[in-house]
Figure 1: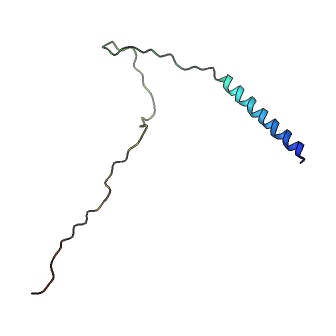
Figure 2 (figure 1 turned 90 degrees about the vertical axis):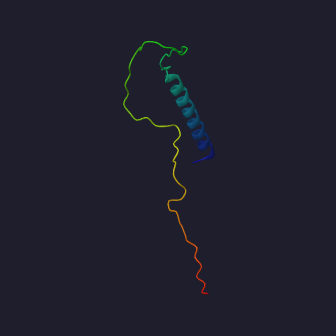
Figure 3 (figure 1 turned 45 degrees about the vertical axis):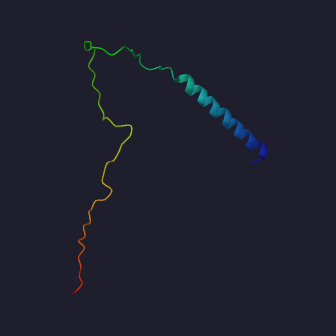
Length: 81
């Protein structure tokens, strides 16, 4: 393949990638759900919702001992008198 062909292929790929990015960005029409923010206070329950799935923490911390075995040694004197 000639140098000119490689350059045209690279430019064409770049244009195609830019076109895909523009189409993808414009296709995201869903702006999300509307939410209401109010001060904390006692109120009636508005809605009860259920969800399937599993609750996962953002950061998992593993709490464990550094050593799994304690080594107790008895010091004895083995000298003869």
